[in-house]
Length: 326
Image (cartoon, rainbow, N blue to C red; front, side, top):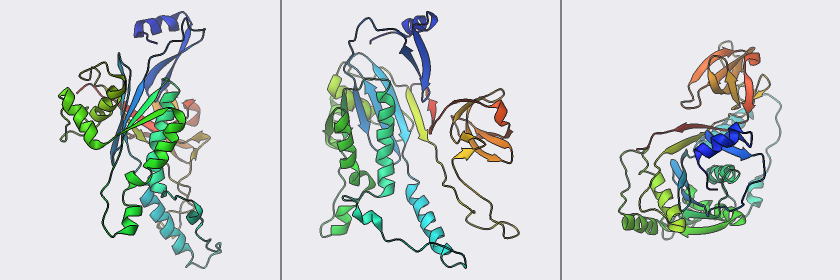
């Protein structure tokens, strides 16, 4: 570090490096000892949100990557459905286990599963980019939700973003140095640079990534305005738990199997290369045929792909799309 794309291509041509893709980002891995071990100071700015979250990797010289990821929002609904189905099975004349006592009360402090999934998704993304970029500092916008006077239960767990933040901060401090900025401090940093946040277009750089860029720039400096507004969109794939039957019986009172994480020997979500559909990921299966899905839109490309025609490239739990600068 630093290097250029031309130098990286020359390394690949001379077999000094091997290229690979990390969540849609082109990366190189050196096969020889580097000429120097100097690395730049790189800050990771994180802007948590309820629906969309932003993350920026930035050094003093360059904005390396702007990430906008979708929050994991479906855990609460999935647990509610699971609970209702479990209770309905106890009224049928079928063998079932006795209800176990609530073991979740032993965890102190207890974090609800939906809250833990939201914050854990951020930590998973950070661990992915730590393998590629030597991050030396984390800057997170500290979330402060409003408390209610006299509402003791509400104040204990009133916001899914507030409850799990302390757990997230502890995990980040184990990795590198962590700095916290309040919302008003982030606004002051934007105003000092003359930057305006957008509220109309949620997919624009100024909607979410602007705050994460400002947070990272407050540590490493180097720019008065974003020079790289290219956004890398990431959406987590949703995997359904294995169910021995669907929620409602089909015709003939027959319940078909549903869910699971395996499809004809492939792990669902795995990246594969198909002769016709090129790069895609594995979905479900029907009989001896696979479903293939688009990485950008998640649209099903086919439902009749042969397993022998799919070349396995790697495991995957995210789909991505790169936008043009806006």
